[in-house]
Length: 99
Image (tube, rainbow, N blue to C red; front, side):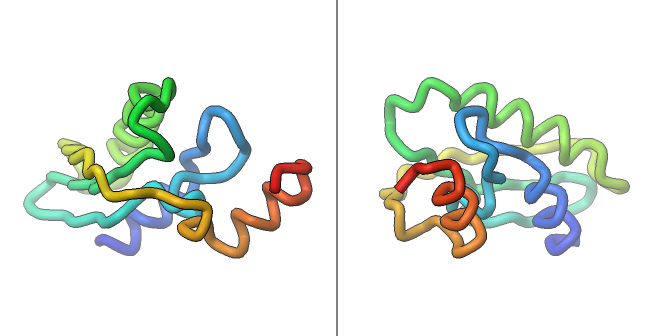
């Protein structure tokens, strides 16, 4: 089920760049237990203006996954850096002129 949740999260785009939250390195883990999806999530900065939008988009997408009745998002304050971006995410950003 965790793999299914991660596939769904690949469809959730960051509001500022067309890169999904997994490839951007924001998702730090997922778990599933008895209808509840749990997501560990960090942000690019503590003052990220899009935190609520990102969490709402994650919640809405995961509630579409069969078997998910509840979504719990745990904000973890693990340092984020550009090194957390996947190669696919880097390529998308490079094509947009973001380095």
